[in-house]
Length: 439
Image (cartoon, rainbow, N blue to C red):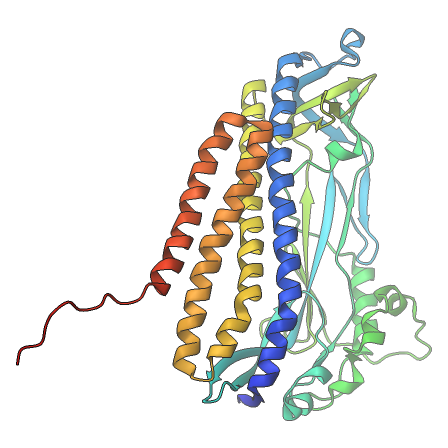
């Protein structure tokens, strides 16, 4: 059942809030400007570093023996990785000879959703109607149901958890690449995780079942006997649960630990999840074929540092040529630059909207007038923010790439001209009629 909360904000409160928001808006414009400037410089420097690196990269060739003649050189190599490390999950006692194993935990909980609807009132006030709904779902962290807004939901939709288990990841430290050793930064770049069909030891399964059964609610109406989702219990470790000593023989426990390929369910009914159930999913990354770009240092590797201070290194899964790897690196650099351009421009535009927000609030004494002024302020903020962003990018390119920077300045000038023309058009008086009325 939905729960609705209605709050009202007076015109003076909205006006005060909008003026306070000017400071935040100015900060956003400054942060966005700095990000745009830094981003362009970083793009050029990274591109230059990659070009420099590609020009000096050598083929390592056979990796079955250490080639001391290429020591200190940036090299490209392809081959298989291997490891003898056995990785173990400390809670479930499952192990694998792998590059990496990881555990992802989810909890079946009541989740609170909210939806806001704002209504303008005559006189400049604003009414906000917030509707809260509740549904069961798998989430990455336990939810404290005592914080639900609906008082009835606090009582009716109580959350608890059968066990507080955290996500876990560990990777091998000894990984060979032919006759070479891979450093940690390259090992961390090895990808290709796949579902891991675990085989849970029977003694571990029995111990987990016995311990979790102590935490099960006596009935569905009494979830408080299980582990509640308070801040104190959420910070506790599941290790404590595993280390508790059972002083009295327990009655035969129902099946609470269910292994389904790469998933372990802590539940009395895994087919129909109940509040408090825990779902653990395992993944494993096996050794495979890799291609690397890195500086050779004895029998291992390190990052190559270009003349401008940027570091270059790359690991790709599979067999990739030197040219393809540098092509991918340039493409990734370009993609990230565009993403940060949009982020920076977005910060500037949002900041300008916050700076101009008092205008629409002042005009909202008449709701329709407030909407018109707000739409106009939004358009001006967008055009001005886009022009300012292009201006900063252009100046940055004048610093790093003058020819491209000039073209961008022209586009920025056109956008600024559109803003000025719109402003003059809005202020221009209506032309006087020269017609003489007939008698």
